[in-house]
Length: 79
Image (cartoon, rainbow, N blue to C red; front, side, top):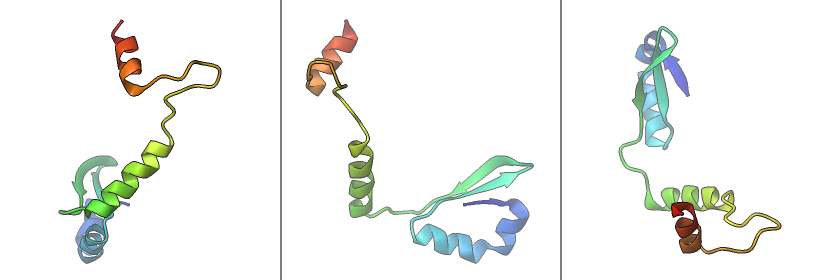
């Protein structure tokens, strides 16, 4: 969510409720990001779920190439 400073003043309670629910709000000043309201604590379960979701989109092995482990990929990039 994004809000201007004026809107954030009016909607502060909602922005805090969103933060408690795990959502971030970026406050803008003159159409540029000025601040970010974020949750204080993020539950470990939620972090794990987010990490698992991101991990699904990472492809270590491309079609048509030999299969490599992460260690092999690291060594290959160091060459």
